[in-house]
Structure formats: C-alpha cells, structure tokens
Length: 444
Image (cartoon, rainbow, N blue to C red; front, top):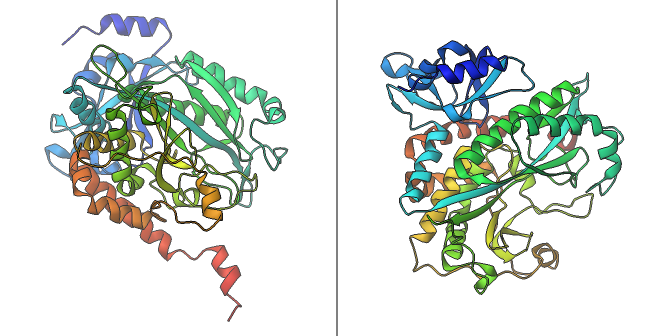
C-alpha cells in the first residue's frame, strides 16, 4: 500500500479534519458519511462501511459477508469542500465481499470505459446541466424562487441574472474553487431555470464531476433559501430541463475518430455507427436516461408558453437540428435524451454500451440526415419518425425487452433498476391527483 501520510499532512495543512466518503445510489443520489482524515489509508484499501440493504439498489442481503457495502475512496478525487470547512470530498467505488459490486453504477460505467479502452479509444463527454431554482411555500406548493422571473420568453434574461447576482456569484466562486473550468452561465427558456456549462472530460471524470456539481449546487442554493431542482419538468406549459451529453471519441494518439468534415453531417463512419446504436436502442435507453414519471412530461410534443420547446421526441438525427434526438455538430454527437433526474453513471454507461453496439454492427443502415423542423412537420400533421416511449412504464418494458443492451450494461444492475422503477410506476398509477379530482369528481 502507498504511504498516505504526505497526503494527510497536506490536507491537514489546509484545515481538513474529515473525509466525506461519497458514493451514488441507483437513483443517482449522492450518499456517504464523514470519516476522520487519519483513516484515509483504510478508506482507500478497504473502504468506508455501510449497511448494504440501507442503500437503494445494491441488492445486498441483510446478513453475511456480502451484507456490507464498502465505498473505497478514489485517491485522486480528494479535495476540500469550500462549503463545508474542514471536510474533503472523495469519490467512492462500491465493493462487497472484497469484489467490485456489480450493482454499483460507478462500477457499471467503469466496465464500459474498459471495453472502450480495449479498442484504444476514449470517450469524451461534455455535460450541459439545466436546473430550476425553486422554493416551497408554507402550504406545500412549489414555485419559482424568483417571484419577478415572469417573462413569457425568459431565455438569456439579463434582468434575472442581475437580480440573482449574489446567488450566481456564489455558484461561480464555489465551482471555481472546486476546479471547474466554467464556460458560461445563462437563464434558460423557463422561468426559474438556469444552465451552467463547464469543460468536458473523459466519461468517468465527467460523471464524477457532475455529481460534485450537484453536491455543490444543492449547498449553494440552500444557502440562499432556495432548492436546486433536478426535476425534469416542474412547470406545466414551460420547457423542461435536459442533461445533454456532447460525445466524441479519440484514439490512442488523441485523434478524433468521430469527425470527418467530408462525411455526412460532418461525421465519420465510426461516428455515424455510434449514433446509430443510440437510435436503435433509444427506447431502452429512455428508461436509464429519463428514469422518472415526470421525465415523460418533458419528452412530449407539448405547447410551451415561450413558443419554443427543444424536447427530443422523435428518433431522428440531423446536422445542428435541435428537434432531433441526436444532433450532429462540429464532428461530435449531442445526445439529447438524458435529463437531470438520471443516474449519470448509469446513463453514460448505457449510452456508451449502445454506441459500441452500433459500431459492432456495420451491416445496419446508417442514419440519414433529417433537415426539417420536426415540430413544424408535426403541426402540419405529416408522417413522423418513430417517437420515444410516452411514459416510464413503456420505457421500462423496452429496457426489459432489449436483452443485448441489458447484458452489456449488466443484468444485475438492470434487474435492480427495473424492480425499483416498476414500484415507482405502480405508486404513480395508483395515485389520485388534483387534476383527476377537478376533472371527474362532479362530472358524471
């Protein structure tokens, strides 16, 4: 084992006394505990211990050697948290019985990254986090945190940015201290909705960084009396939040292998086949990339008060075409299906598995470029490309039926995911909503 005393001394010199050992449950929620810094060596070699059945989706028993979940610290992930003085954040991998846990979503992504590395390739991912800033009234109703944020078309609204300057500066300074290379902050197309962009990274690092982004965003928003919300569509009649993945591949020499300026939509044969894998497996991918009941309120061809919606409803691909599920641009692919309620590790792992499957099936026809505004075509009642599942139940059925994708991602993980999400759908299906009471209680 390496000697961690130098790292402990360095962290202690920065005022650190504890390590936040953070893992991600199957729902994509960060969990963990605080452990004294002097135990760092054990945290790396053995891990922080947790009761396995107390964590969503581990599938671990209540007794025996495999009942304990161990989160092993990834040493290079250690860094002080500016919003928790004295605490260093650490990403953890899930282990049980001394072996990598096959229901740990970070381990699931690591397996896909390893498959890609066997081909001498690296997946680079730029993530676009969109989110709402909300608060909850005393009567329990949720509303936009900024009561003056009322424009019909609020995209790029500078007055909202000015009113919320203190909050946005807190976001900026916190993320910079955490090492984020920020690229932009803007107001999005719904009231109370923002987007913060930062530099891309390799797939695993990008997933780790997004989890750290969410951890920081929750803390900053709470400091200002608000809730950082990853709910895909909290406002009816307004656009929802996506979590678009910008995807590109490089070979061992760092050369871009998806790009070809002379190719269709600026993509190489590899890029087109990767995209084709996404389209072929799109229905099953919806379950992992859009994993909540509410996700399908976003994935609907609905009217938007702003007059614009970017929801990727139809399984099509086009050059710089935001009405398609896959957008080709600048020699890379934008995968527009995911939303911020997803488990980022699972969504990326499934996306990569589908892309690899597309690359492995050269006999499949390549996707053709869609050069139409699909919403205009839909409004004109013209024939449309196939559309994504309309609800979570259909998406779960598609994942269960897509054996090749399930096996590539990992059957153990998918079984846990399907079981929990079917329970979620069942609870929703049995719930009587206010809309139903208002429409039906005295109607007949």
